[in-house]
Image (cartoon, rainbow, N blue to C red; front, side):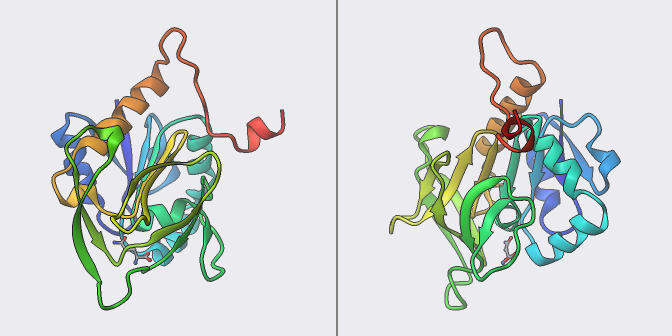
Length: 211
Ligand code: GLN
């Protein structure tokens, strides 16, 4: 199985290393042809304004939406979460609006540029996730189809899942955390080869809406 990592900008190497650590082949995605044969895609942290420009320049917009609509897992971390949000506070246009959430960029301000926290993420088991936040966004609103996977102690939402799309405001790949990548790999193999009786639930966008 091959999982793509968008490698236009930002912290993509750490995602490739994390995939290697769990025995999954990671593929650098820079242009549409790189998506051939991948069963999932990771959107790394970095700078979402730059990613927006590079996604457009390399013609990756439609091919990534098509991959998501096929039901393949898509996982965005930090800037990658901003890329996936349906709404970005302040009126910026969405980039790849696959996740029914509103996000605020750089939500922790200058005083608290970066911090780390141990978070309970029940879907990943009892051991907390050591989460690294770097000029991180926060999720301000979630739509009805969105499951909250983790919150800060103050209740603010920092990890979500909507069907085949997962996003974290933090960087699990910078803390040696592999469980999100394992979850994505499990979803990718389920997408490749749906077992008997396992209802496949592709992302409800274009195709399903026109039915
Ligand atoms: N602050 C960045 C942005 O708004 C995200 C930071 C990150 O990905 N670590 O795009």
